Length: 189
Image (tube, rainbow, N blue to C red):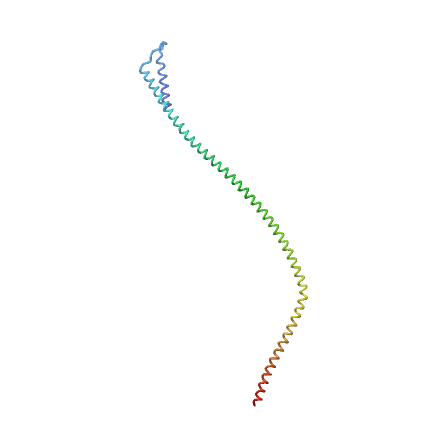
C-alpha cells in the first residue's frame, strides 16, 4: 500500500509541475485545485511514510523480542554446553578410574594365574611323589602282605582247631552230664 501511494504522489507531482510552467517561459501560479491535489498527495505520502515507519517499528520490536529470545536460548545452550563439558570431564575421570581398576584387576588376574600355575605344578610334583610312595609301599607291603596272608592262614587253622576242640569239649560235657545223671540214678536205686 505505501508503494502505491508513493507512485500516485510521484505521478501527481509530475503532472502538476509542467502545468505550473508556461510554454512561453513565464511562470503562472498553480491553481487552487492543483495545490489541493498536491497537498492531498503530500498528506497521503506522509500517511504512507507513517505507516511504513510504524510497520518498520513493529518489525524492529519483533526483531528485538526475537533477538532477546534468541539471546536467552543461546545463554541456555551455553549453560547446557557448560554442563555437557562438566559431565564429559566427570565421564573422563570415571573412565580413567575404571581403567585404573581394570588395570589393577588385570594385575590381580595375572598374579592369580601365576599362583594357580605354581599350585598346579606343586600338585603335579605331589602326585608324582604319591605315585612313587605307592610303588615303594606296594613293594614293601608285598613282602608284609605275604607274611600277613601266612599269619591269617595260620590263624584260620588255629581257629578251626579251637572250634573243633570246643565241639569236642561240649560233647564230653554232655557225656559227663549224662554219666552223672546215670550215676545218680544208680545211687538212688
